[in-house]
Image 1 (cartoon, rainbow, N blue to C red):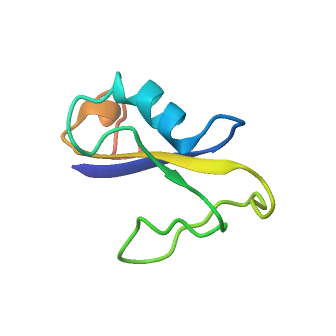
Image 2: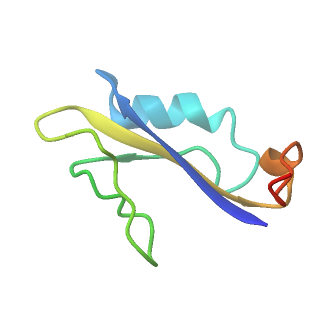
Length: 82
């Protein structure tokens, strides 16, 4: 199963400082990536539209996101809905 997860982060730190911090948690090239977030729309999604509900204009906001596959975060969920 493939997954995408993201958080919106407001921080006084720079992009480089945040990237350095989150890089220690990366276990592959697509985990804990950090980018500047200037709009509510999540631009790293190519198919479909996702957006944050918070207004990010005039704020120092970043998106921290991961792509992955496998059952890792879903191992404890019963996807059948039981």
